[in-house]
Length: 164
Image (cartoon, rainbow, N blue to C red; front, side):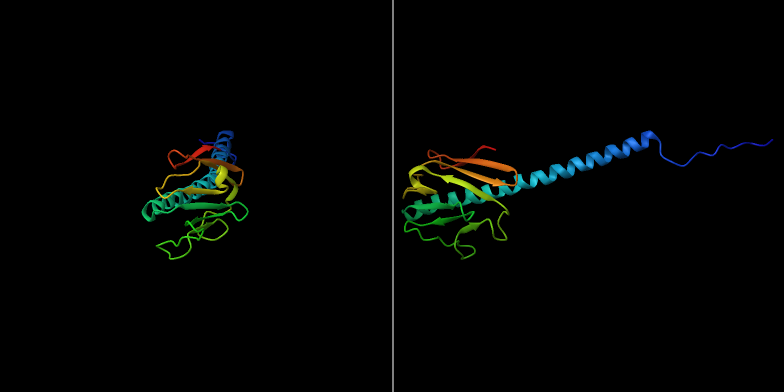
């Protein structure tokens, strides 16, 4: 007796093609999400730098019993820790001026300081000789399509994400 074998045509079934398309769509969604979160991560990193500078300014004001401030340069996309005379404070670890410049390597990249408003203090968050903030204010940072508005609370001296 002769058996007849049916030859299966080589190709993919509709189910196999659907699964491949779904996997590719999932991978594309993950890639887009990762790219968008890069802006958020860089903004959060810049906020950490700002909180550190503000905390250090407060600590120096208390320990040296003289006003210190963090001055924001909107046009230069940077900020610096300054003493009572306006001189830039030296970082004790690097022995360099305590400046965070978002245009230089090593700092969060492509951060734009859109605005810094501390009322009568202009673009400076100033701490008196007891480490108490003179005024509150707001900072607006942007990277790519993501904007963060930060509130500097006069009562607490804390930098808080007010909105995005």
